[in-house]
Image 1 (cartoon, rainbow, N blue to C red):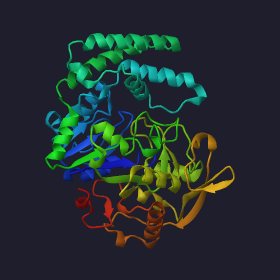
Image 2: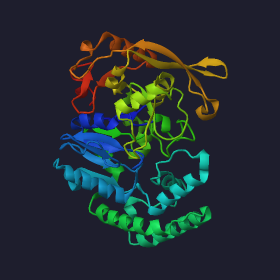
Image 3: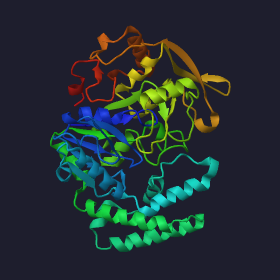
Image 4: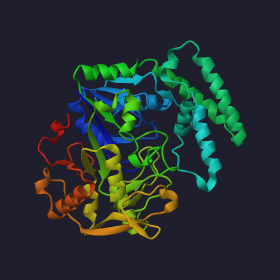
Length: 434
């Protein structure tokens, strides 16, 4: 069997959580492979909204084991609060049985969060829009080979190692001139409570668990966080996250060989959004952008910040499809564009006076200008449709254009926030994914 991958093709917030939640029942394991609590996957369970930050979106199904892989960075206090919210919903989730955590996943320490805030404040107008969750400093310590990992909490010398790295961080905070002492006391108390919860959970050597599942013929779905355009290598650098958000990151983040990758399901909105700073060629700064924001509820699941909104960026989307080896596309929030009698799509850029469909080397400095093509809108309620052939002709034409541009098949449309608000190209598309 292979590992199917579901990931975002834009700057995150594409609606990955809902699609994972819908598909999870077809799999024996759902695994997060990168990122941390800077990601927020919004689900609606029993009519109640919940945002997951660490825990895979398959947790509300009885069948799959949910794994937080070694490529993820974990905030123990946030994880504890997340578990409490899941328990409060009353969906019958047994965290101790249904959740596993890789011992090689790195810990976000309280001082990592403080360093994140101090570093971002020091940048002034050059800040990158960090979520201030300590993600960057944690990955920095990982690469510098001095980080603490989940498995370390089982070791006798954990407290000594924690104090040693804390002292290093405090020296840096003092260098920044950052007043942190009063915050640290409270944050450390929450951190230690979180560690106590972590010690009650199932900690595993994930490499062996994942590969044992594959050898036993079981199905695995790898769930990405953030989006392709935030990838540390291929995103809009330096306005990116600190991990590999693309298909290649699954191998590092779960411990599997490249030939184990199966279907790659790429998620895109019918338009574009971005949270925080950084380039956004197709951004709409006027009334239309605000209309999309309000209608789509475009506010960050993790930070609550208003998302920047714009028309779909097809050159960037094709770049993401190519980079990830996407085998099928899921398009979400198609219903939001029902607002408009006419919509637009960025189909090329102008860079230094030349037209191109390629994403330039440095989007932030080369400032590509969008070239748009207009399409008739569908301007109707999509809630009663359940098959592509029933959709308005103008929507079918728009989808056909996007498919032809990307060279990839659109298999599912999402027409609302609920799990059942999906329209399929094929009647049993979910069964074909496994």
